[in-house]
Length: 238
Ligand SMILES: C[S@@+](CC[C@H](N)C(=O)[O-])C[C@H]1O[C@@H](n2cnc3c(N)ncnc32)[C@H](O)[C@@H]1O
Image (cartoon, rainbow, N blue to C red; front, top):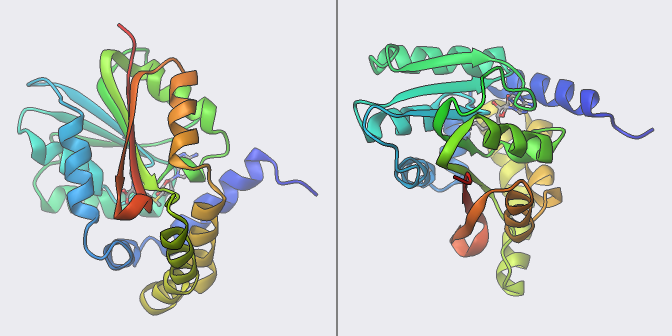
């Protein structure tokens, strides 16, 4: 039987509730310690105005919310996720960083954002789009809640284009990602899903095309690690 969007959403929510505890450590290992720098770059690319606001969907444990808040002390950030466990870790980290007055968290589904049109100066998503049941609906929602001229940015695993790099990358990550899951989270199947979902997800060129189909303009791609990670950004039409 085919998987319905509701099946996928329930499976993904359970999975992230399950692996929340070891998530940050595993992430840092799998990205070879580079994930923080990528999130900082996303925050800079948002080019938020002083006193501006950003929405980070699929915010998980709040790392990108923190990078956005650290990028300028006048910025307000809203993080949104549907995993209560991921959000509760985010809440602890935000309180420990004394940023609860500038970062608020919302438990909701990324495909139906509970915000009015043009509520934010930018919208971001980190390693989230391949998990949502309806990519185009989610992009449409990100564009809808972003103000004219604001950025919509995704950073996620990509598909290396150069065949020898692609072969090495998929071969290594097929064993490495589940091994990290086993060692850090004691949950190899969940991390096997993360590897498989990255491989099954559209590549960064197709993602950029979907950004453009949503109506976003000036769509660009920036690749890291030979395209294993890719930042795709677009601008909401004025
Ligand atoms: C791989 S984690 C990424 C977390 C974070 N953005 C980061 O940079 O580390 C994916 C997150 O997306 C959330 N998520 C997946 N589908 C979602 C949906 N439909 N609505 C809201 N959150 C969702 C999961 O709960 C999980 O916290």
